[in-house]
Image 1 (cartoon, rainbow, N blue to C red):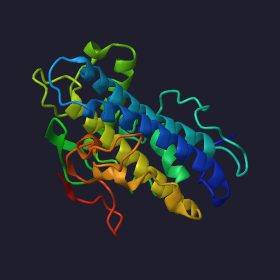
Image 2: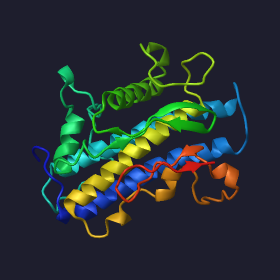
Image 3: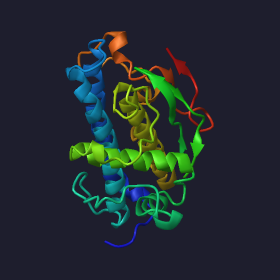
Length: 263
């Protein structure tokens, strides 16, 4: 095991296992959102507890993807890398010291043969209320606003895990919470959309650079990026299948995020 290198076509099986694990990670988040959707609620009630978990697990799914890609990129083709076994060692922030590249960005750049981070087109939430989210235009690559928001959410994920939210120095994410600093359903869903985009676009970039056969089999389900998912796990009520209301975050024919509004 050595420095990160380009993931090659011969590592498809191992990369597919990582993609499947990432899918399971986001499925856990979607399960929480579906539970939240079962009843229209507001204010301090039991379902509010789900919001921090939605945010935390969204970040965790991304952090695990980065860690496992790093492990795979340091092994020779044919070596097995089991998802979940690599240690992240807290290097998954995008911002590096002194404004340089972080270890996570350098790892993803090597694994994707230089396609990342420039290939990212990330839409941040500009404002929202409840499930309704309004997104900014796509931010390209390591845009400073995107980096700040991603790294802030990673910090939130650690604070939630250790019940240390009061230790947050700044509140970066726009919120409709009355106190201006609560992870409510709006901000939780914005975290989900942010890290879902990062994971989706990262998987696609590496699949493209490695020239894997049938790359579409590795992608995250495309309906997840529309804000309205297909019936799953016994949930069939259309209103309960809405992850967010607003722009779809999928891909158009040019590879950029789409702008279809989902009611």
